[in-house]
Image 1 (cartoon, rainbow, N blue to C red):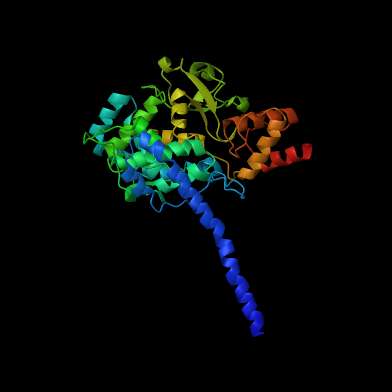
Image 2 (cartoon, helix red, strand yellow):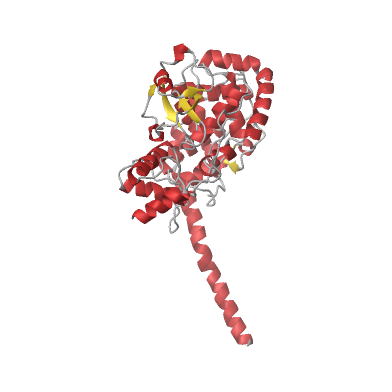
Length: 409
């Protein structure tokens, strides 16, 4: 019996190095990969001292989402609330009301900076405050990750390696420039950092030193962070004086498959087609082109979205994100909630939406990404399928429609 135990123990001890070797090899390969990036870092002005100091002992974080690890399935992007929650949960009235009240207080506190920002970039104060509120709860939320480790990992085994290789180099440059200390250089899993959540490349493209202290500080300086957010919107095409969207009541015969950016009409034309505005739309703005947005298909609120809607969408691609930010900015000025209530109580799982997208693609109705996100194009394609199948056309992904697709195969 003792001999058997010794044999088993010896086998276990011999097995340990064999199990650990791949991890050590992977870390050695990571270190070699990081070292290979020195010429690129040097080319943008990062000192050798900073490169060595900040990369010494740097290890990948294989728990991050959106990775493509050898021998393992791609982890996929994180289940962001914008894509897995129903609108009523994401654009929660209690949250909007709380952030709007705080936004009104901050509007007074930072009035001088906000006036300068609007004068320089054309973006209203409530809009940049709303971005700050959505991104970090006005600075109360601290990002959980070490930015340099995040962008290094994504550059090494992420699904967007080329993009993150540049982000890693620029993250090193931020540290070399002394813009922020490493301990304060925190980010989301995707590398967005600061009060208004910028990638390192966005920091250098859009960063503004509004407080005039000689450096762009989006981590501690509220004026710098808000001005940088405004400049990013302006650089992406923000039109001063134009609303982001108008809530409307859709007519009973409205075609929800028109809810795509390509189906643009002047606002006045939408109104003549029976879309009733919740708030008065000045005659001067009725010539502006707008698209129909129905985040819950035919069931919840409807909106006519302007060019500025799609500018905000470049900050975060989710329609719910834009609705949250736009509505929050409105609520800092007016106390009115959405006129039409949200009604959906469940959201299909990502895998189910992916299955739906694949079926719609095979039918030639959907030509966008297979990503499990029920965005504008998916909802419109779904409506087209419902028309062809003789189903109720509501442009809302449900289990019932998914079962109908399964039965049709």
